[in-house]
Image 1 (cartoon, rainbow, N blue to C red):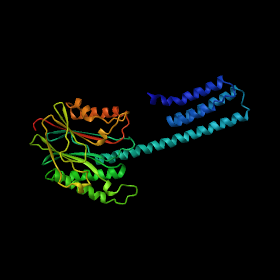
Image 2 (image 1 turned 90 degrees about the vertical axis):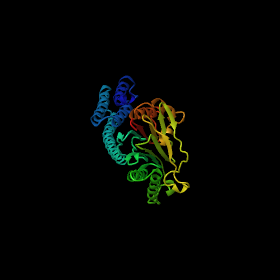
Image 3 (image 1 turned 180 degrees about the vertical axis):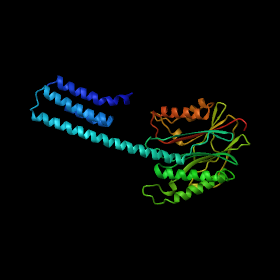
Image 4 (image 1 turned 90 degrees about the horizontal axis):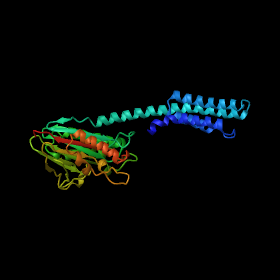
Length: 358
Protein backbone atom coordinates (compact mmCIF):
# COMPACT_ATOMS: atom_id res chain seq x y z
CA UNK A 1 0.00 0.00 0.00
CA UNK A 2 2.82 2.36 0.91
CA UNK A 3 4.53 1.68 -2.43
CA UNK A 4 1.36 2.58 -4.31
CA UNK A 5 1.09 5.97 -2.59
CA UNK A 6 4.70 7.03 -3.15
CA UNK A 7 4.12 8.22 -6.77
CA UNK A 8 1.61 10.71 -5.36
CA UNK A 9 4.32 12.40 -3.28
CA UNK A 10 5.48 14.88 -6.00
CA UNK A 11 1.88 16.04 -6.57
CA UNK A 12 1.36 16.45 -2.83
CA UNK A 13 4.53 18.55 -2.55
CA UNK A 14 3.43 20.76 -5.45
CA UNK A 15 0.08 21.30 -3.74
CA UNK A 16 1.76 22.19 -0.44
CA UNK A 17 4.04 24.64 -2.24
CA UNK A 18 1.04 26.27 -3.92
CA UNK A 19 -0.86 26.60 -0.65
CA UNK A 20 2.17 28.06 1.11
CA UNK A 21 2.58 30.60 -1.68
CA UNK A 22 -1.11 31.61 -1.55
CA UNK A 23 -1.85 31.65 2.18
CA UNK A 24 1.37 32.62 3.95
CA UNK A 25 3.31 35.89 4.10
CA UNK A 26 5.52 36.64 1.12
CA UNK A 27 8.59 36.09 3.28
CA UNK A 28 7.70 32.37 3.43
CA UNK A 29 8.89 30.94 0.13
CA UNK A 30 7.50 27.74 -1.49
CA UNK A 31 10.74 27.05 -3.41
CA UNK A 32 11.88 24.17 -1.19
CA UNK A 33 8.64 22.21 -1.64
CA UNK A 34 8.61 22.81 -5.41
CA UNK A 35 12.24 21.71 -5.76
CA UNK A 36 11.65 18.63 -3.59
CA UNK A 37 8.63 17.74 -5.73
CA UNK A 38 10.79 17.72 -8.87
CA UNK A 39 13.60 15.65 -7.34
CA UNK A 40 11.21 13.12 -5.82
CA UNK A 41 9.41 12.94 -9.15
CA UNK A 42 12.69 12.05 -10.87
CA UNK A 43 13.09 9.08 -8.52
CA UNK A 44 9.48 7.91 -8.45
CA UNK A 45 7.90 8.77 -11.81
CA UNK A 46 8.45 7.97 -15.49
CA UNK A 47 10.05 10.55 -17.78
CA UNK A 48 6.85 12.20 -19.00
CA UNK A 49 5.57 12.64 -15.44
CA UNK A 50 8.95 14.02 -14.32
CA UNK A 51 8.82 16.62 -17.11
CA UNK A 52 5.22 17.45 -16.18
CA UNK A 53 6.20 17.88 -12.52
CA UNK A 54 9.00 20.29 -13.50
CA UNK A 55 6.70 22.31 -15.75
CA UNK A 56 4.09 22.36 -12.99
CA UNK A 57 6.55 23.56 -10.35
CA UNK A 58 7.88 26.35 -12.56
CA UNK A 59 4.33 27.27 -13.60
CA UNK A 60 3.18 27.48 -9.99
CA UNK A 61 6.10 29.74 -9.10
CA UNK A 62 5.53 31.95 -12.17
CA UNK A 63 1.83 32.22 -11.30
CA UNK A 64 2.69 33.23 -7.73
CA UNK A 65 5.08 35.89 -9.11
CA UNK A 66 2.23 37.33 -11.16
CA UNK A 67 -0.19 37.13 -8.21
CA UNK A 68 2.24 39.03 -5.98
CA UNK A 69 3.12 41.50 -8.73
CA UNK A 70 6.73 40.37 -8.65
CA UNK A 71 7.32 40.13 -12.38
CA UNK A 72 9.89 42.94 -12.13
CA UNK A 73 11.62 41.49 -9.07
CA UNK A 74 15.14 40.32 -9.98
CA UNK A 75 15.29 38.08 -6.90
CA UNK A 76 12.14 36.27 -7.98
CA UNK A 77 13.59 35.67 -11.43
CA UNK A 78 16.73 34.31 -9.84
CA UNK A 79 14.63 31.84 -7.85
CA UNK A 80 12.70 30.90 -10.99
CA UNK A 81 15.98 30.26 -12.84
CA UNK A 82 17.07 28.01 -9.98
CA UNK A 83 13.83 26.02 -10.25
CA UNK A 84 14.28 25.66 -14.01
CA UNK A 85 17.80 24.35 -13.45
CA UNK A 86 16.49 21.87 -10.87
CA UNK A 87 13.79 20.76 -13.33
CA UNK A 88 16.44 20.10 -15.98
CA UNK A 89 18.56 18.18 -13.48
CA UNK A 90 15.49 16.14 -12.43
CA UNK A 91 14.98 15.02 -16.04
CA UNK A 92 18.68 14.08 -16.33
CA UNK A 93 18.52 12.27 -12.97
CA UNK A 94 15.41 10.38 -14.08
CA UNK A 95 17.17 9.20 -17.26
CA UNK A 96 20.21 8.14 -15.23
CA UNK A 97 18.09 6.12 -12.79
CA UNK A 98 16.21 4.51 -15.65
CA UNK A 99 19.47 3.47 -17.31
CA UNK A 100 20.78 2.03 -14.04
CA UNK A 101 17.53 0.15 -13.51
CA UNK A 102 17.77 -1.28 -17.02
CA UNK A 103 21.34 -2.41 -16.37
CA UNK A 104 20.28 -4.03 -13.10
CA UNK A 105 17.51 -5.93 -14.88
CA UNK A 106 20.05 -7.18 -17.43
CA UNK A 107 22.50 -8.23 -14.71
CA UNK A 108 19.76 -10.04 -12.82
CA UNK A 109 18.67 -11.75 -16.02
CA UNK A 110 22.21 -12.98 -16.64
CA UNK A 111 22.48 -14.13 -13.01
CA UNK A 112 19.20 -16.02 -13.27
CA UNK A 113 20.32 -17.66 -16.52
CA UNK A 114 23.61 -18.65 -14.93
CA UNK A 115 21.79 -20.03 -11.89
CA UNK A 116 19.48 -22.08 -14.12
CA UNK A 117 22.50 -23.38 -16.02
CA UNK A 118 23.92 -24.61 -12.71
CA UNK A 119 20.67 -25.79 -11.10
CA UNK A 120 18.82 -27.66 -13.81
CA UNK A 121 15.08 -28.10 -13.21
CA UNK A 122 14.54 -31.39 -11.39
CA UNK A 123 12.05 -33.87 -12.91
CA UNK A 124 8.82 -34.27 -10.96
CA UNK A 125 9.04 -38.06 -11.18
CA UNK A 126 12.03 -40.39 -11.24
CA UNK A 127 11.09 -44.05 -11.01
CA UNK A 128 8.99 -44.56 -7.87
CA UNK A 129 10.02 -41.18 -6.44
CA UNK A 130 8.19 -37.86 -6.68
CA UNK A 131 10.43 -34.82 -6.33
CA UNK A 132 10.13 -31.10 -5.71
CA UNK A 133 12.79 -28.43 -5.13
CA UNK A 134 12.99 -24.93 -3.70
CA UNK A 135 15.63 -22.24 -4.07
CA UNK A 136 15.42 -18.84 -2.37
CA UNK A 137 18.08 -16.16 -2.76
CA UNK A 138 18.79 -14.01 0.27
CA UNK A 139 18.74 -10.92 -1.96
CA UNK A 140 16.85 -10.44 -5.19
CA UNK A 141 19.86 -8.64 -6.70
CA UNK A 142 22.25 -11.49 -5.86
CA UNK A 143 20.81 -14.67 -7.26
CA UNK A 144 24.11 -16.44 -7.63
CA UNK A 145 25.11 -18.50 -4.63
CA UNK A 146 26.65 -21.77 -3.48
CA UNK A 147 23.54 -23.75 -2.54
CA UNK A 148 22.89 -26.69 -4.87
CA UNK A 149 20.79 -29.80 -5.36
CA UNK A 150 20.35 -32.57 -7.93
CA UNK A 151 18.42 -35.80 -8.44
CA UNK A 152 19.37 -38.52 -10.93
CA UNK A 153 17.90 -41.93 -11.73
CA UNK A 154 20.69 -44.51 -11.85
CA UNK A 155 21.00 -48.31 -12.02
CA UNK A 156 21.21 -48.19 -8.22
CA UNK A 157 18.00 -46.22 -7.79
CA UNK A 158 17.38 -42.51 -7.44
CA UNK A 159 20.40 -40.68 -6.09
CA UNK A 160 20.07 -37.25 -4.53
CA UNK A 161 22.56 -34.53 -3.69
CA UNK A 162 22.12 -31.36 -1.69
CA UNK A 163 25.06 -29.18 -0.79
CA UNK A 164 26.31 -25.79 0.26
CA UNK A 165 29.59 -24.35 -0.98
CA UNK A 166 31.31 -22.02 1.44
CA UNK A 167 31.23 -18.39 0.36
CA UNK A 168 29.26 -16.30 -2.11
CA UNK A 169 29.52 -14.88 -5.59
CA UNK A 170 31.25 -16.22 -8.67
CA UNK A 171 33.82 -18.42 -6.92
CA UNK A 172 31.05 -20.15 -4.94
CA UNK A 173 28.97 -20.55 -8.08
CA UNK A 174 31.92 -21.98 -9.99
CA UNK A 175 32.58 -24.48 -7.20
CA UNK A 176 28.88 -25.39 -7.08
CA UNK A 177 28.82 -25.95 -10.85
CA UNK A 178 31.88 -28.17 -10.62
CA UNK A 179 30.40 -30.22 -7.76
CA UNK A 180 27.12 -30.70 -9.62
CA UNK A 181 29.00 -31.71 -12.77
CA UNK A 182 31.02 -34.27 -10.81
CA UNK A 183 27.86 -35.69 -9.24
CA UNK A 184 26.04 -35.94 -12.58
CA UNK A 185 29.04 -37.70 -14.11
CA UNK A 186 29.71 -40.17 -11.29
CA UNK A 187 26.24 -40.87 -9.87
CA UNK A 188 25.50 -43.43 -12.59
CA UNK A 189 28.48 -45.75 -12.23
CA UNK A 190 29.72 -45.30 -8.65
CA UNK A 191 28.90 -48.66 -7.01
CA UNK A 192 27.80 -47.13 -3.72
CA UNK A 193 27.58 -43.83 -1.85
CA UNK A 194 31.06 -44.04 -0.24
CA UNK A 195 32.66 -44.43 -3.66
CA UNK A 196 30.56 -41.53 -4.95
CA UNK A 197 31.63 -39.37 -1.99
CA UNK A 198 35.28 -40.20 -2.66
CA UNK A 199 34.95 -39.09 -6.27
CA UNK A 200 33.25 -35.85 -5.24
CA UNK A 201 35.99 -35.24 -2.67
CA UNK A 202 38.63 -35.64 -5.37
CA UNK A 203 36.84 -33.26 -7.72
CA UNK A 204 36.33 -30.58 -5.05
CA UNK A 205 39.95 -30.81 -3.90
CA UNK A 206 41.28 -30.50 -7.43
CA UNK A 207 39.05 -27.53 -8.12
CA UNK A 208 40.10 -25.76 -4.91
CA UNK A 209 43.77 -26.29 -5.74
CA UNK A 210 43.32 -24.48 -9.08
CA UNK A 211 42.84 -21.12 -7.35
CA UNK A 212 45.48 -20.92 -4.61
CA UNK A 213 46.27 -17.24 -5.04
CA UNK A 214 43.02 -15.51 -5.93
CA UNK A 215 43.27 -12.05 -4.29
CA UNK A 216 40.84 -11.65 -1.42
CA UNK A 217 39.73 -15.29 -1.49
CA UNK A 218 40.01 -17.94 1.19
CA UNK A 219 42.97 -20.26 1.49
CA UNK A 220 42.53 -23.62 -0.21
CA UNK A 221 41.66 -25.43 3.04
CA UNK A 222 38.77 -23.03 3.61
CA UNK A 223 37.16 -23.74 0.23
CA UNK A 224 34.95 -26.60 1.24
CA UNK A 225 31.40 -27.74 0.63
CA UNK A 226 28.99 -29.54 2.88
CA UNK A 227 26.99 -32.24 1.12
CA UNK A 228 24.38 -34.88 1.77
CA UNK A 229 24.01 -37.89 -0.52
CA UNK A 230 20.91 -40.06 -0.54
CA UNK A 231 20.01 -43.20 -2.45
CA UNK A 232 16.48 -44.57 -2.85
CA UNK A 233 16.66 -48.03 -4.46
CA UNK A 234 13.81 -49.26 -6.63
CA UNK A 235 13.56 -52.72 -5.06
CA UNK A 236 13.88 -51.96 -1.34
CA UNK A 237 11.72 -49.74 0.93
CA UNK A 238 14.78 -48.00 2.37
CA UNK A 239 16.83 -44.84 1.93
CA UNK A 240 20.60 -44.72 2.29
CA UNK A 241 22.19 -41.45 3.37
CA UNK A 242 25.75 -40.21 3.70
CA UNK A 243 26.55 -36.89 5.32
CA UNK A 244 29.62 -34.78 4.65
CA UNK A 245 29.18 -32.11 7.30
CA UNK A 246 25.66 -31.27 6.10
CA UNK A 247 22.50 -30.71 8.19
CA UNK A 248 20.63 -34.01 8.70
CA UNK A 249 17.57 -34.68 6.54
CA UNK A 250 14.07 -35.07 7.94
CA UNK A 251 12.01 -38.23 7.46
CA UNK A 252 8.27 -37.63 7.36
CA UNK A 253 6.41 -40.86 8.16
CA UNK A 254 2.68 -41.03 8.97
CA UNK A 255 2.55 -37.66 10.69
CA UNK A 256 5.85 -38.14 12.50
CA UNK A 257 8.99 -36.14 11.77
CA UNK A 258 12.37 -37.68 12.53
CA UNK A 259 15.78 -36.12 12.11
CA UNK A 260 18.13 -38.63 10.50
CA UNK A 261 21.29 -37.91 12.44
CA UNK A 262 24.28 -39.76 10.91
CA UNK A 263 25.87 -42.42 13.07
CA UNK A 264 29.33 -41.39 11.87
CA UNK A 265 29.29 -38.05 10.02
CA UNK A 266 32.14 -37.23 7.68
CA UNK A 267 33.78 -33.81 7.25
CA UNK A 268 32.83 -31.50 4.38
CA UNK A 269 34.22 -32.10 0.92
CA UNK A 270 37.80 -30.85 0.46
CA UNK A 271 38.52 -31.87 4.05
CA UNK A 272 38.74 -35.56 3.17
CA UNK A 273 42.11 -35.90 4.88
CA UNK A 274 40.14 -35.93 8.12
CA UNK A 275 38.29 -39.12 7.10
CA UNK A 276 40.10 -41.92 8.93
CA UNK A 277 37.69 -44.88 8.73
CA UNK A 278 36.04 -44.20 5.39
CA UNK A 279 32.57 -42.90 4.70
CA UNK A 280 29.65 -44.32 6.67
CA UNK A 281 26.21 -44.97 5.15
CA UNK A 282 23.05 -44.85 7.27
CA UNK A 283 20.15 -47.12 6.33
CA UNK A 284 16.58 -46.04 7.17
CA UNK A 285 13.18 -47.57 6.29
CA UNK A 286 11.47 -45.55 3.57
CA UNK A 287 7.98 -46.82 2.79
CA UNK A 288 5.44 -45.71 0.18
CA UNK A 289 4.04 -42.32 1.24
CA UNK A 290 7.14 -41.43 3.26
CA UNK A 291 8.93 -38.20 2.42
CA UNK A 292 12.54 -37.14 2.80
CA UNK A 293 13.30 -33.43 3.22
CA UNK A 294 16.83 -32.33 2.40
CA UNK A 295 17.80 -28.71 3.03
CA UNK A 296 20.71 -26.31 3.44
CA UNK A 297 21.56 -24.53 6.67
CA UNK A 298 19.93 -21.34 5.40
CA UNK A 299 16.62 -22.95 6.42
CA UNK A 300 17.43 -23.79 10.04
CA UNK A 301 19.53 -20.64 10.53
CA UNK A 302 16.70 -18.32 9.53
CA UNK A 303 15.88 -16.12 12.54
CA UNK A 304 12.83 -14.21 13.65
CA UNK A 305 13.02 -10.69 15.06
CA UNK A 306 13.99 -11.98 18.49
CA UNK A 307 16.90 -13.95 17.01
CA UNK A 308 15.33 -17.40 17.49
CA UNK A 309 16.27 -20.00 14.89
CA UNK A 310 13.59 -21.47 12.65
CA UNK A 311 12.18 -24.69 14.23
CA UNK A 312 12.06 -26.72 11.02
CA UNK A 313 10.98 -30.10 12.42
CA UNK A 314 8.22 -28.54 14.49
CA UNK A 315 6.85 -26.48 11.59
CA UNK A 316 7.04 -29.27 9.04
CA UNK A 317 5.10 -31.70 11.23
CA UNK A 318 1.75 -30.19 10.27
CA UNK A 319 2.58 -30.38 6.54
CA UNK A 320 3.93 -33.95 6.47
CA UNK A 321 0.89 -35.33 4.67
CA UNK A 322 1.03 -32.75 1.88
CA UNK A 323 2.38 -33.48 -1.59
CA UNK A 324 6.01 -32.37 -2.11
CA UNK A 325 5.16 -29.18 -4.01
CA UNK A 326 2.56 -28.19 -1.39
CA UNK A 327 4.98 -28.92 1.44
CA UNK A 328 7.63 -26.66 -0.09
CA UNK A 329 5.02 -23.97 -0.81
CA UNK A 330 4.17 -23.99 2.91
CA UNK A 331 7.87 -23.90 3.81
CA UNK A 332 8.51 -21.03 1.41
CA UNK A 333 5.74 -18.85 2.79
CA UNK A 334 6.54 -19.75 6.38
CA UNK A 335 10.22 -18.84 6.05
CA UNK A 336 9.35 -15.47 4.55
CA UNK A 337 6.82 -14.78 7.31
CA UNK A 338 9.11 -16.04 10.10
CA UNK A 339 12.02 -13.85 8.98
CA UNK A 340 9.83 -10.84 8.31
CA UNK A 341 10.89 -11.01 4.66
CA UNK A 342 14.57 -10.55 5.58
CA UNK A 343 16.40 -13.77 4.69
CA UNK A 344 20.07 -13.67 5.68
CA UNK A 345 21.25 -16.61 3.61
CA UNK A 346 20.42 -18.49 0.44
CA UNK A 347 18.05 -21.40 0.95
CA UNK A 348 17.71 -24.68 -0.93
CA UNK A 349 15.42 -27.62 -0.16
CA UNK A 350 14.57 -30.87 -1.89
CA UNK A 351 11.69 -33.24 -1.09
CA UNK A 352 11.57 -36.86 -2.25
CA UNK A 353 8.43 -38.96 -1.74
CA UNK A 354 8.21 -42.69 -2.42
CA UNK A 355 5.13 -43.53 -4.42
CA UNK A 356 3.11 -46.75 -4.00
CA UNK A 357 4.52 -49.85 -5.64
CA UNK A 358 7.99 -49.52 -4.08
